[in-house]
Image 1 (tube, rainbow, N blue to C red):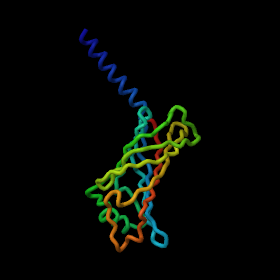
Image 2: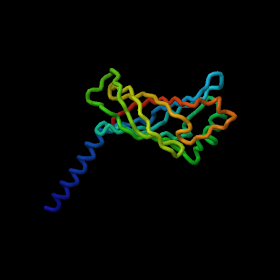
Image 3: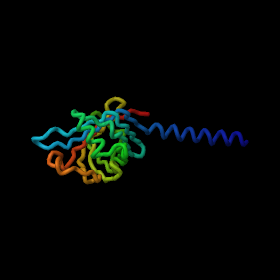
Image 4: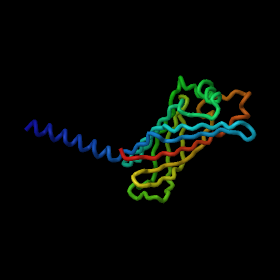
Length: 184
């Protein structure tokens, strides 16, 4: 009888983890781009195309992780200054976002875009900031696409911009993301 109970508990645990895994979607090559350019000055723009993101369609939770050194610039000197002087990527090697989508019925997704509010916390440079935005969610075949954008400021994360270059870097940083989730 004990063996049957043990087997039943193990089977129940496996079934629960299987059901839970069915709700998970992953993107290991998500893209995040930020731009802090000012007119008349050199472009301040970087992209990271190896952002990992997870979406749980059961709970509508979303989380992403970007290694800061994964952001690439056109100008290698700018990339070096970004990592060493501004973001301090040796001390703060990653940026994360954890949040929840609101009012999304995953089963009704189609190739037509649905605007979905998302709220969560972006952590960068050792600081967290509440972010509220909308994602344009759609399903293309087996992939759930979620592009979107939002705005942050360097001061939100205690990132100091030296006065000598302050007029060359935007006070408001435009952040664009694009995730293509596949069922795990």
